[in-house]
Image (cartoon, rainbow, N blue to C red; front, side, top):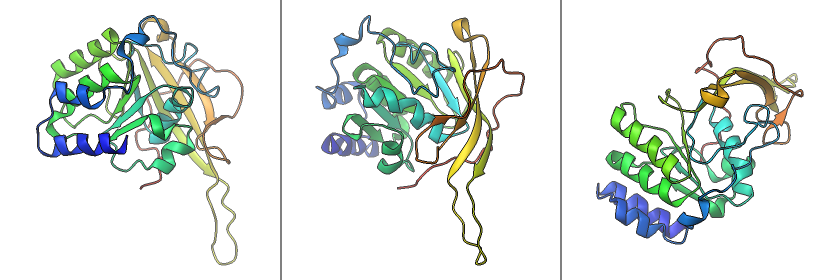
Length: 250
């Protein structure tokens, strides 16, 4: 898999990203026909109140406010056999992905897709189950429509991170974040152990009714965990994009 990723990066650097080349490179990564009619991909029990149907194949789920939330979203599906891809996340380390349950042997990483971003995402949607991407600052509306439609037609899941993605079925946002576990001694030593966050889910169709959950992200032992059971109707504002994210650079 490492050789495949290296090859992809070389294609991007030389601005020769071709849909056919990516498909050939990823041959064998996923059986494109097996996803038709497959059940939704599972999510962590902590995220189940927000996504009671899991990650529905063919859908687009917009995530904002926390890279840790993004990794936690992918973790259970990856651990249970799904192929995933991270595109445009140069600071996400293998250690960070592994902490949230992502199986590294089934993870394709393209840190810097360059000008061929939309072509790369389109080809990956055809080859793997879940494609998470940090879109460039300016995305052509036509690319948004094409990639959303491509995920739908190939029964894959598109997860754009950061800026709002028009047409997303579900939008997950971290509204609040507070670190706990600092024990400051006489010398000022201390350690952050876990973070309490409030995550909201809203969207359209079956996800039109907003939901809110209080989570540990990360939990004291790593990964994600629930603070309490159940969800409530969201009466708050949109996610706080300034929330500190828990991320190990690598």
